[in-house]
Length: 95
Image 1: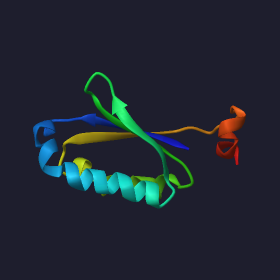
Image 2: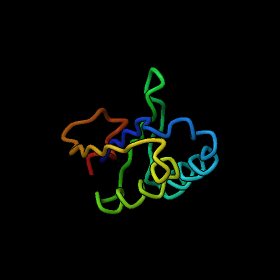
Image 3: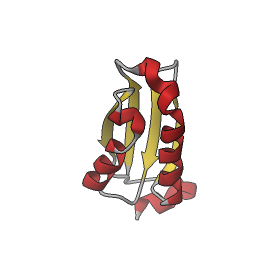
């Protein structure tokens, strides 16, 4: 499981130009069953993605395809988590 932090970078002002592509990238992650949760980092720091069912190399390649990453709107930091214990509602993350 991975947490991807997408923190605003030097080209933050260009976010509006690439928003539709970024939203399409997010939707593709959900459609592919990789993204479990996407949300904003507060206050106005960027966003985060919870990803599952993918290896690090494939996730890095996917993140590089995000228009926000490609255009320097955000920088990506990927943190890998190896779940050892979870609430029953999140038990699928343990497999």
